[in-house]
Length: 169
Image (cartoon, rainbow, N blue to C red):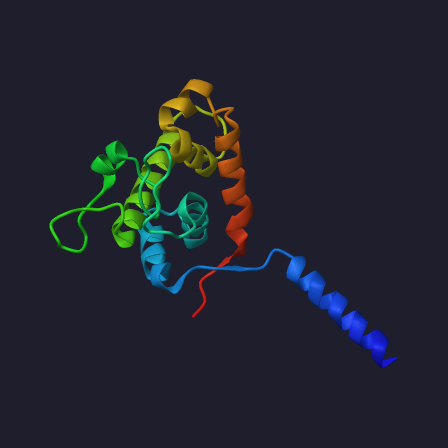
């Protein structure tokens, strides 16, 4: 009987490990994400965390093949428009996580506003995520989420993961 109980406990442990566990937001980014999520009512810390995880895996030094930089993966032209020096060092940097997360939130709020103001059908957050990935001009061109596999998967992965993020500790 004891052997059956041990096997049953092992099976339960394996099942628990195979379930999608909570994703805990790294401690060093929690405050910046929570603060940035206050930029507009549509943003939540979970949305920003899921987007950051998708963009860089919370790596502030990430650089993509396309030249996007930092934790929120800004290309230089977009960073030039949205980056702000928040720490007073005289330069805004996409590699400064706080500055990048703040810029990400402001850009997302702008894109959500654009989506709501447009006559494009679809959820404004989904349209904003698609625009963050592919550009607002592509969302306008296709009158919705562009039919690019990368962009469609980007929106789906962020939406699917949003509920799993936790801000512990």
